[in-house]
View 1 (cartoon, rainbow, N blue to C red):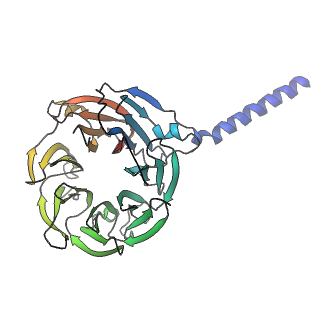
View 2: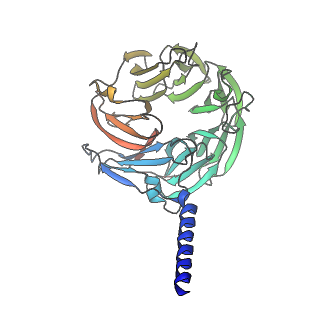
View 3: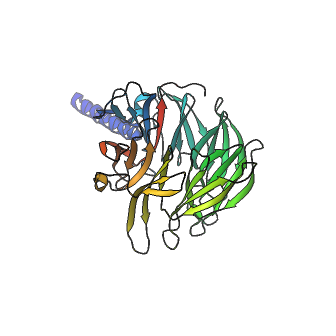
Length: 392
């Protein structure tokens, strides 16, 4: 009888442990991994580090943040998880954008419908801002502006128009919302206006072809600029021009690069140039615009990959490959792109097959590979941490 009772209790304990393990399966916190990068530290640099936001596969809740510390040369994978062990589900589903404003780090988590806010130096979580189907973030005079598809994460020809949400960076409260075009993407500020690239990606093949213009003082859309279909990236150069990418439709209309310039005394921007340069991502450093392109053609089934440089003053292509040592053949799927604001080193991420760990590459300004390192899944966005941060 005693033996039977003991066995019964043992079975109950085993069943309880199995049930507990099953309940906590989705709550496992991935440990951080540290690796030293073979780079030469610069003690005089004003850039402390670099954050890499990894998208993670949609529906897998595997978005992560990596951090590279320039003075020590240590690269940390899953930095957020290490600094926030009490956040059970960690960052969430699909990291879309990352940026620093003042003393805070902002990560836009698309399918989790939130902007995660952290201390920029420690990485500790401060809070979150709930915004539906959020995409990208921009800042101006104490406010964060977040583009949003508004509707559910679903390809639908009847999907609603998108919006830009205004968030107070001190209180993290949403203080305004303005309707723009369909499925808005990146934004840029010029004067007291914000320009928003509308894609219409959920409504394919009926893509949007407009750039919304928002008066930031009144916070309302004042006009739309007809441009090209399926727009995405937007960057401002040193001369004040805006560079916008159009992804085309992968069939009859190829990807191209647009330029908006101010030709009026009031500073209003207009479309002035449409360059036949395919771009999936762009980064500007000085008077150089670096671009990468991975352009799939549905008719031929081929994927054309290119890397180049444009002189932002002349709007001319000055190099058709910014990688000069032949190591571009190591890269499977170029994805994220950034340039170190001081050294001019070029950082390029490889998403590979979109389901496994990616790779971060560092190239010198001359296009020579300096190093590469493993990242999280689908490394997408990069931002740089100054040695000194202040404000909100």
